[in-house]
Length: 237
Image 1 (cartoon, rainbow, N blue to C red):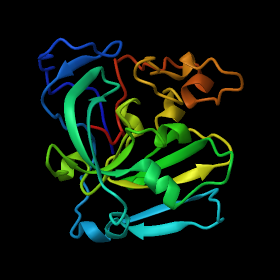
Image 2: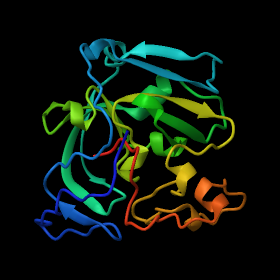
Image 3: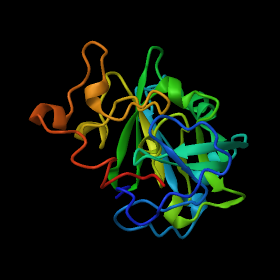
């Protein structure tokens, strides 16, 4: 299970006073944010991933991380933005571009939405356009080292222009959707898109016609739930 409010780690100072997204505070450490057990992975190369749903070939593809790593590798330096209102600065990610994975296991033409999965059944809705962005990556390394178990070893999804609940630790794959569907946090009142610079935190901010209902909206609850950011099951941080 995943990220909750940041009670244990006071924000570090933003060292260079760079412009932060709305509501965010920069920090230089790498806090760990999740609830529940960290998976015990004995062999990273045999970690299995699945890419399915509405694929172009109508097949589901199940591959090991070792197989996936035959795709080209890339490096990316990017900040990571937690919906709990802090930003970790200048993460150096290394891994496989998400768009290369999309090209290897392509969707049907016209697909716009994807559900991405982490361990324990965690899910998040991501637009296909966001997976195809230059900065979207299946990361296996952070700051020059293999991911630690607490930070998502052996692989995590990184989409820096979205809040980090959209990027599961212990990544397990994705499903191309014929119709949009909310993931774990989107069902509980969080924004379907989650763009950081637009501060898209909550489902009530969704203004497009025919937006999908969330459980919080259905029940008339305050999506903020009395605190500043998501808690519970979020594979981020």
